[in-house]
Length: 419
Image 1 (tube, one colour):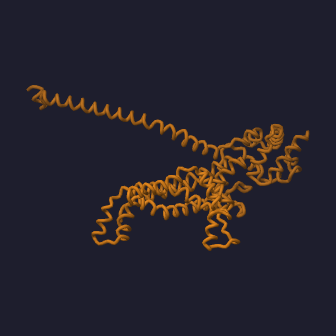
Image 2 (cartoon, helix red, strand yellow):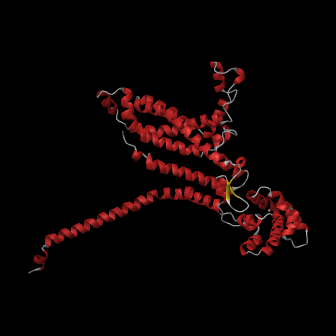
Image 3 (cartoon, rainbow, N blue to C red):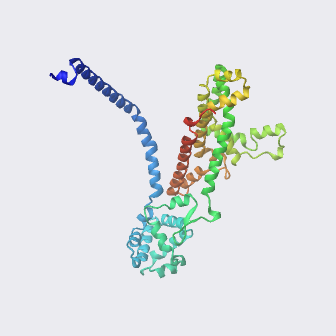
C-alpha cells in the first residue's frame, strides 16, 4: 500500500497544509511587525513617564527613607555605636562635634538632633564650643557637666537611631507619631499634632470642592449636550476661556474680588445683604479657598461629563416619555444613570487635583485655609526637612492611589449600570 493511501492524504492535502502554514507564518510576521511599530509609537510616552513620573517618585521615596546626613557628619560616633564600644562613644562624639563646628555644619547636626528630641539644638552647639576649648578627653561625666540632658538614658539610643542611614521616623512624624526616650512609638502631644488634622482638612476641602463642582457642573454640561449647536458652542467658550487663562491670574482676580472692599462685598452691600460696616471676610480663610478652587477646577468636571452626555441619543428620553414617564422621571431613571460614568470620571479628576492643590490655598487661604501641600512646601523651602516633606508626599500619594483603586473596584465606569 502506498504512503498516500496509508496516511489518507494526497498531494492536494499536502499542498493545502503548506499553504496554510505559509499563511499562518505571514500573519504572525505581520502581527510582530505591528507590535514593534506600536511600541515605537508609544516609546516617547513611556520614556516621558519614566523620566517625569517614576524616577522622581522613586527618588522621593528614597529621600523619605534614606538620610545619611548625620552618619556623614558624625562618622566616628556612628562607628562606635555600631560596634558597641561604649568607652569610645563620648570621645568620638566630642571629636565629631568639633569637626562639624570647624566645617560650619554644627547647625545641621543640632537641627537634626533637635528633630529627634526638642531642646538638643542649644545643647549640641554649646557642647561643641566647650569641646573645642578643652584639652581633656571628654567622658559621659564631662558631657553631663556641660548639660544634664547628656546624662539621660535615652540619649545614646537617640544617637544610634539618628546616625542610621535608613529610618522610618519621617513617616512617624508625617502621621504625628514619635519615639519616646525608650524608643517606643507614641503619639505626639495634643498641642504638637499637625499633620493628621491637615490631612483630614485636605480631604474635607477636596470633597466639598468636588461636590460644588458636581452641583454646578452637571447643569452646565446638560445644557451644552441638549441645546442647539450654536448654544453649545457659546457655553463651551465660556467654560474654556477661564480654563485657558493662567491659574495665577485667576487666583489673583479672586483675591481682588473677595477682599473686604472687593466686587463681591460691594454687590452684597448694594443688595442690602450686609451693611457697610459689616462686610464679609471672604479671603485669607477657608471660604476663599473653596470659592477659588471650585472656579478653577469646574472645567475638569464639566468636560469629561459633557463627553459622555453628548453621546446619549435624544431618542432615549423621547421613548421614555412616550411610554408614560414624565420629564423628571425619564431624566432620573433613564438619562442620569447613563451619565454616571462621566460624573464618576469628573469627580475623580477634580478630587485628585484638589488633594494636591498648592497655589490657591497659599495665596487666598491664609492660616485657616492651608492644606497639606502647603506644609510640604514649608518643609522643603523653609525648614529644609526634605525627608519629612518626602514622607508627607508619599502618604498623600498612597491616599490618592487608594482612592483611585476604590473607584476602579467599586464605582468605576465599567461597573456603573442603569438601574
